[in-house]
Length: 115
Image: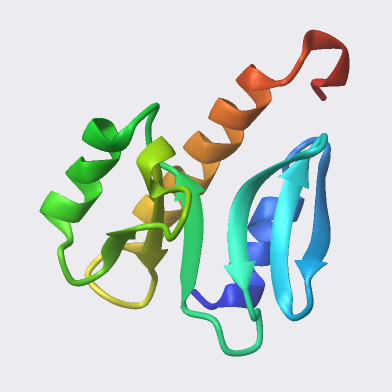
């Protein structure tokens, strides 16, 4: 899997849309909220996703994949991790993490804004 494949997977979700809030940094949103940080899609090998309600749940990824998972800068305390694909984390697990992040973000949207 590469970043373009992952972007296509993200954009296939109901209500998902691509944004670039910072020059060169691609994110995918549902409604007004980000569910996947892809960064530079041409050079990227990581995805930032919501991995739990807090740091404790998200730390399970870091315990299992210490070389390929890390707390996301600035928002890690809220359960966001950066996962590297193409390493020890299998493509299926990356896709499941993106799917879970999407579901978590959708559930937090006001009902009128959910797809």
